[in-house]
Image (cartoon, rainbow, N blue to C red; front, side, top):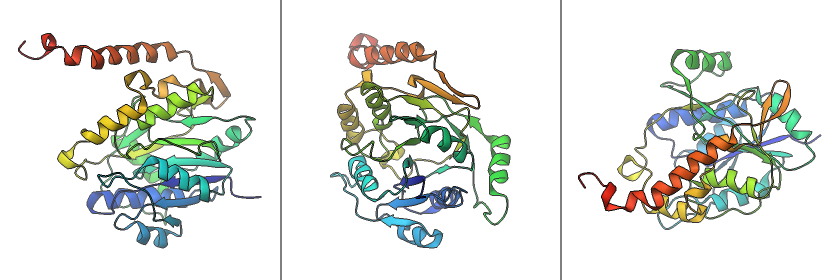
Length: 284
């Protein structure tokens, strides 16, 4: 039997605090009991070294935009080309996964059609390396009890889907807004069921600053281009737009989607009209 899961990610440079949390994340993937294929992508500083140290695969050649930012189109294209797992998981480089993943893979793999799995994240403060020679899952759970909180439906850091479902992807800039929202929108547009895995799959986002971005902000021309590619705020879908929830008792329909649609419509009106109306500007 081949590998069931391929995890792929395009990490930031392994520097400072980012190095600590990315090493924690990659080791958590490599230590999963389901023995996934793990692929690190890109040639940022320290990526090749981490791949060798943790015994995972490395694909250095990723296309970038004129600002030097990796393109999601290239990341997904290469992942599709090299993945061996029947299920693929894109995850951001600061996300810790645990062995509850196995309990998710079984029901998802039994679906006789395409799907897109997503999950809300727990935000945790991690300042030091985890000890993977001991019970690392208990360490993470302890940190979460101490300082963690469940993020809202806009924190989208992990996607799970069947192999070969995503063979093409727009030229979104990684680490800039709205590509993840578009991914959920596109699945819904194509009648691919979106499944909220939060009730059964905890994922842990290690908090960090944005010093790696110019001005410590993800706004700017790359963010504007991502929004254009996504089709604007009417396509600002979130985890709340999921068709189903995966629970310990199986799939059940998500009955709260209308709330997300209402909020999305408000944002569209604001950004299309009010934001650019001088009567609403401060001091007007």
